[in-house]
Length: 143
Image: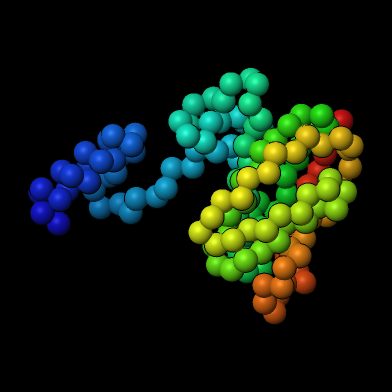
């Protein structure tokens, strides 16, 4: 790589708030909150204002959701950002009345406020291949 190209890449990375170490592959910076309970703004990486819901990213791929278990609080709004790595998937939580399509290359956002505590099986309800019947995760809502 030429010095000019390296400089341009470093400049663009600095403008985006990303540093790249020479010789190491660049990894995307995850800005949304994981299922650990921290609240982070997706756009800035800074703590989200108290009036905005927590953001949880879920990635669908043949034949799993990542993470495969999330824990929410009853009565506390959360925004779930759904993405697919490969084909169209579904995201269906019967007990929480969530039914979304996840298309590859797009982010599907759904904001919910769980109104009851419990353990809710979550499935892919779009045929996505031979392992489709094993594609599930768990949403736990605590009091």
